[in-house]
Image (cartoon, rainbow, N blue to C red; front, side, top):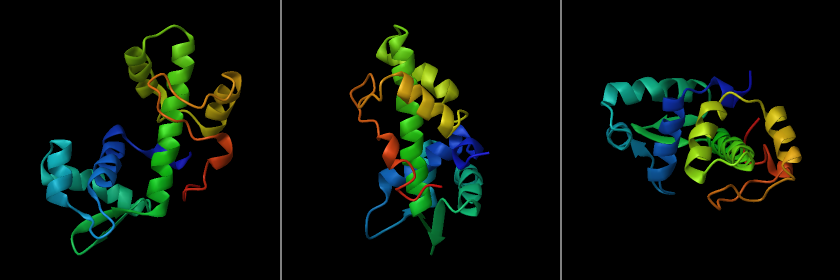
Length: 145
Protein backbone atom coordinates (compact mmCIF):
# COMPACT_ATOMS: atom_id res chain seq x y z
CA UNK A 1 0.00 0.00 0.00
CA UNK A 2 1.32 3.43 -0.93
CA UNK A 3 1.84 6.08 1.81
CA UNK A 4 -1.02 8.24 0.56
CA UNK A 5 -3.39 5.27 0.67
CA UNK A 6 -2.55 4.77 4.37
CA UNK A 7 -3.88 8.19 5.34
CA UNK A 8 -7.33 8.90 6.69
CA UNK A 9 -9.14 12.03 5.56
CA UNK A 10 -8.57 13.57 9.03
CA UNK A 11 -4.84 12.80 8.90
CA UNK A 12 -4.70 14.55 5.54
CA UNK A 13 -6.52 17.53 7.07
CA UNK A 14 -3.95 17.51 9.88
CA UNK A 15 -1.11 17.76 7.34
CA UNK A 16 -2.95 20.58 5.60
CA UNK A 17 -3.50 22.39 8.92
CA UNK A 18 0.21 22.21 9.69
CA UNK A 19 1.42 23.35 6.28
CA UNK A 20 -1.07 26.22 6.37
CA UNK A 21 0.17 27.52 9.74
CA UNK A 22 3.87 26.67 10.01
CA UNK A 23 6.52 29.25 9.17
CA UNK A 24 10.18 28.92 8.33
CA UNK A 25 10.95 29.86 11.93
CA UNK A 26 8.26 27.98 13.86
CA UNK A 27 6.31 24.79 13.92
CA UNK A 28 2.64 24.63 14.89
CA UNK A 29 1.30 24.00 18.37
CA UNK A 30 -1.17 21.22 19.06
CA UNK A 31 -3.66 23.85 20.21
CA UNK A 32 -3.46 25.69 16.86
CA UNK A 33 -3.75 22.45 14.89
CA UNK A 34 -6.83 21.48 16.92
CA UNK A 35 -8.36 24.94 16.48
CA UNK A 36 -7.75 24.90 12.73
CA UNK A 37 -9.38 21.48 12.45
CA UNK A 38 -12.24 22.40 14.82
CA UNK A 39 -11.48 19.46 17.12
CA UNK A 40 -10.18 19.05 20.66
CA UNK A 41 -6.45 18.83 21.33
CA UNK A 42 -6.67 15.10 22.22
CA UNK A 43 -8.45 14.43 18.91
CA UNK A 44 -5.82 16.38 16.98
CA UNK A 45 -3.10 14.44 18.80
CA UNK A 46 -4.80 11.21 17.76
CA UNK A 47 -4.46 12.25 14.12
CA UNK A 48 -0.96 13.68 14.58
CA UNK A 49 0.73 10.71 16.26
CA UNK A 50 0.35 8.27 13.31
CA UNK A 51 1.68 10.98 10.98
CA UNK A 52 4.76 11.27 13.15
CA UNK A 53 5.14 7.47 13.17
CA UNK A 54 4.99 7.47 9.35
CA UNK A 55 7.69 10.13 9.16
CA UNK A 56 5.37 12.78 7.70
CA UNK A 57 5.50 15.09 10.72
CA UNK A 58 8.27 15.90 13.19
CA UNK A 59 7.55 17.33 16.64
CA UNK A 60 10.08 19.34 18.59
CA UNK A 61 9.37 21.15 21.85
CA UNK A 62 5.64 20.78 21.37
CA UNK A 63 5.62 22.18 17.84
CA UNK A 64 4.86 20.17 14.72
CA UNK A 65 6.38 20.62 11.29
CA UNK A 66 6.02 18.69 8.07
CA UNK A 67 9.01 16.65 7.02
CA UNK A 68 10.17 16.52 3.41
CA UNK A 69 8.23 13.25 3.14
CA UNK A 70 5.14 15.00 4.52
CA UNK A 71 5.43 17.80 1.99
CA UNK A 72 5.89 15.27 -0.81
CA UNK A 73 2.80 13.42 0.35
CA UNK A 74 0.75 16.62 0.18
CA UNK A 75 2.05 17.35 -3.33
CA UNK A 76 1.12 13.81 -4.34
CA UNK A 77 -2.33 14.20 -2.77
CA UNK A 78 -2.93 17.41 -4.73
CA UNK A 79 -1.94 15.59 -7.92
CA UNK A 80 -4.30 12.69 -7.19
CA UNK A 81 -7.15 15.05 -6.36
CA UNK A 82 -6.68 17.35 -9.33
CA UNK A 83 -6.24 14.55 -11.87
CA UNK A 84 -9.40 12.90 -10.50
CA UNK A 85 -11.22 16.25 -10.77
CA UNK A 86 -10.12 16.52 -14.40
CA UNK A 87 -11.47 13.04 -15.15
CA UNK A 88 -14.83 13.85 -13.56
CA UNK A 89 -14.89 17.20 -15.36
CA UNK A 90 -14.49 15.42 -18.68
CA UNK A 91 -17.67 13.52 -17.80
CA UNK A 92 -19.56 16.81 -17.65
CA UNK A 93 -19.65 17.44 -13.90
CA UNK A 94 -19.48 21.02 -12.62
CA UNK A 95 -16.26 22.14 -10.90
CA UNK A 96 -17.95 21.83 -7.51
CA UNK A 97 -19.21 18.33 -8.31
CA UNK A 98 -15.78 17.29 -9.62
CA UNK A 99 -14.23 18.20 -6.28
CA UNK A 100 -16.81 16.20 -4.31
CA UNK A 101 -16.38 13.20 -6.62
CA UNK A 102 -12.58 13.42 -6.44
CA UNK A 103 -12.70 13.38 -2.62
CA UNK A 104 -14.45 10.01 -2.85
CA UNK A 105 -11.42 8.41 -4.53
CA UNK A 106 -8.32 10.62 -4.18
CA UNK A 107 -6.86 8.85 -1.14
CA UNK A 108 -7.56 5.35 -2.39
CA UNK A 109 -6.30 5.34 -5.98
CA UNK A 110 -2.72 4.26 -6.69
CA UNK A 111 -0.03 6.39 -8.31
CA UNK A 112 -0.11 4.04 -11.30
CA UNK A 113 -3.85 4.62 -11.77
CA UNK A 114 -3.40 8.38 -11.48
CA UNK A 115 -0.66 8.26 -14.12
CA UNK A 116 -2.91 6.29 -16.46
CA UNK A 117 -5.84 8.67 -15.94
CA UNK A 118 -3.53 11.63 -16.50
CA UNK A 119 -2.28 10.12 -19.76
CA UNK A 120 -5.83 9.30 -20.89
CA UNK A 121 -6.83 12.90 -20.19
CA UNK A 122 -3.93 14.24 -22.27
CA UNK A 123 -1.71 15.27 -19.34
CA UNK A 124 -3.76 18.27 -18.21
CA UNK A 125 -1.83 21.13 -16.62
CA UNK A 126 -4.71 22.55 -14.56
CA UNK A 127 -7.77 21.13 -12.79
CA UNK A 128 -11.33 22.38 -13.41
CA UNK A 129 -10.74 25.09 -10.79
CA UNK A 130 -7.65 26.38 -12.62
CA UNK A 131 -5.20 25.02 -10.03
CA UNK A 132 -1.93 23.60 -11.43
CA UNK A 133 -1.39 19.86 -11.73
CA UNK A 134 2.16 18.73 -11.03
CA UNK A 135 3.54 16.98 -14.13
CA UNK A 136 4.16 13.23 -14.03
CA UNK A 137 7.93 13.71 -14.12
CA UNK A 138 7.85 15.67 -10.82
CA UNK A 139 6.17 12.90 -8.82
CA UNK A 140 8.26 11.99 -5.82
CA UNK A 141 10.82 14.81 -6.16
CA UNK A 142 9.37 16.70 -3.20
CA UNK A 143 10.43 14.06 -0.70
CA UNK A 144 7.77 11.47 -1.50
CA UNK A 145 8.42 7.78 -1.98
